[in-house]
Length: 332
Image (cartoon, rainbow, N blue to C red; front, top):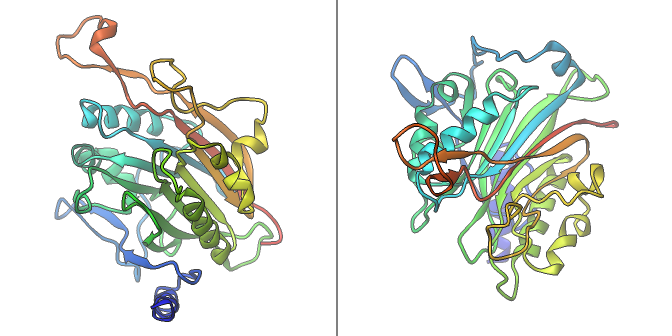
């Protein structure tokens, strides 16, 4: 069985032009864009060039020349009330950020929140989605979704997108996509940059599977040569705190802000457990330039208008978001 798995990985890696480590079974899927003529989301035809969005949201030529990329990752909390309204508020925050965000990783996107994402005019106009059917995996209450700016990543910059299975008690996976970007050294060809969106297993269950999950994500990055793995790392055991470094990756927060706690969960004191840096961004072959926590705001649970009291307010998510900028480094 191990031989068949390795052989299948090699065939898929060649067929999809996606270098994969041995033993990383991938299920490939399509990128999606919204078609105004049919008013439907459709699979991107990777064989044709994609027209730039008419609304470039102010992406500067200087940003493109310098090769900096801006990423936001956010666990949007599937279980709290009003998931659609909360996701809409998070989207508004992300789309208003400056400099413009190029890459968005969402975790815990529920079915209701998914429909809001698909109907958002700005998302339809200016973003590619890894998933666009609104269907959740069998037995699941949520999924991960990756968004790429159509302004920043036009064809042929889009590469393969897949879900890589790893050991998980909750049937979770690594949402893995490749993009092709200019080399830092100014070479005429494009470099592969791998983006991995993860929601690692929850809870302090033993034996813990997060070490295997991070190891597989790191192997995926090494197969591509450079990239980012980001999302909800669920580091609830002491051994989780060193997994990024043990796998040869750079923890962006530790690299740039080692003296700051960087809490993304429980900082409001309302949780029964101590605050934690649940969400992380780790890189390989890149230079991290900036990282910050995006604290969630609140919405009103009622439609009565006026000033809402504390009992009527609900946070966008139980997690804060993380915003990071990074760029390619030599010799790539």
